[in-house]
Length: 259
Image (cartoon, rainbow, N blue to C red; front, side, top):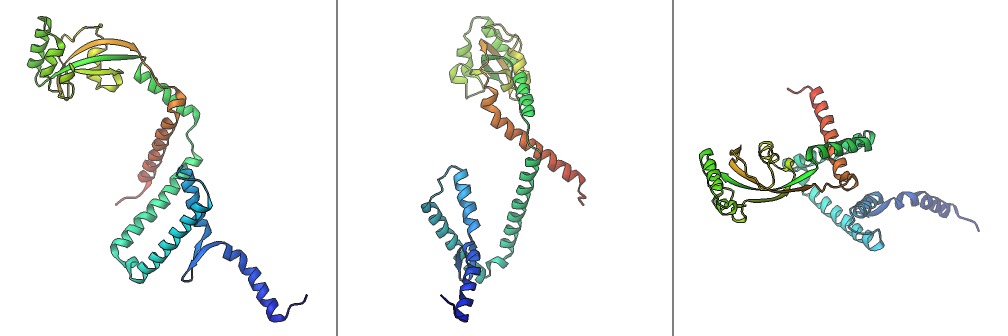
């Protein structure tokens, strides 16, 4: 089989153009939509667990990208890209995208190690302690009011009844019940008020916090049920990652010349 010169030229053009055309998902009014854009969206949908890569998903994404390109072209035609508020929003979006990529690359190069996660977990266990406390409290506005409540309790009054007078309306109707918790869940001064009590005992003197004056009763204690390292590892890793990024940001800001 032989090609005529004109037919041969057309064939060569077609072969040369095929790879370039394959890189585009579609061409809208002469403006190409790269296939890579759809691939990235499919990858994001799958990564977020919102669907699986399929012809149906890709078709939906293709239609969405075409629709967006059509609307974008119309918006530009009407001059929306020249509006000050749109320019400001685009600048903010550009900054966010670039900074997010910087942060992503920084963490890739400076990942949180298993040793750092273990150290943070051990610190959490030490701060939390190995014991949980079931406590009740009555919140009074003044120290005198709290002392009066303690006197009534020593006189035989029931804690649950006096708790109905508590300024803490959230627990007043439940006998002042704060349920089971570790000391670290409370303000330090409040925790110090009950950790030394015997089971069933009430604080001898009011415990002052920012909320007011507390009369605290210890109902019981038990061994703390702390989550295992594996259970909280993702949360710890995320927290340490944010700390690393904040430290990096603080370092950059410190070096910058801000006027």
